[in-house]
Length: 253
Image 1 (cartoon, rainbow, N blue to C red):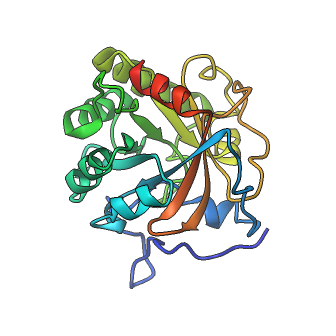
Image 2 (cartoon, rainbow, N blue to C red):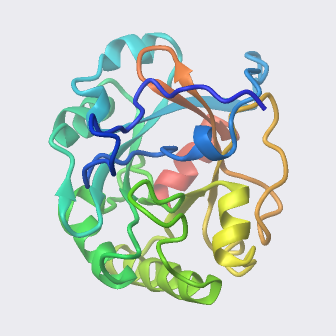
């Protein structure tokens, strides 16, 4: 695989650990899984284009993205129990205002607080859900730790317990099963390729290639796919594997 630098790469001018709060969806994908440099076919009529954004994108040109065919978006709301995205309102409300179906995501830091506590923080700071047909369930971004040990110092069983605590609390607060964003290689290394969430939680897989590749255990198919970090306007571009009707069904619950 070809390893490339991300346009939003988190770095510290001293070469040390990046500052807390600076992580974003896919922060570890390029450095760990790389990219083939290839993109999926542009004419996949059965898939819908989306994007994901964080504070690194600042004020997003949502009308331009809408005009280019992007129909859904996720915005980083929170990280751990210590960070909220200062650009969240413009990004989350702006995507909704142009007609997109939108959602919020939480960057998990299992080494800083429990899963239930982080789910509460997420819901209390923008990660809730409403049955308006245009709000997607919240997403748990669980991937490589940019601040230290890749698995946050947890054993596979400890990581599975942490994820379960987050998902259970999120569902108790919102009535929805959260989306899980991850990469197959991280999931195998850090959860022992746990197969227990596939029946309830939609999978958002990260792989920068022309095909999605093998999926984590328990999921026979993916719901969303982050396929590049170098797409137009905002970098991260995604595909929803289904029709507009299916996307709205996911939003409606």
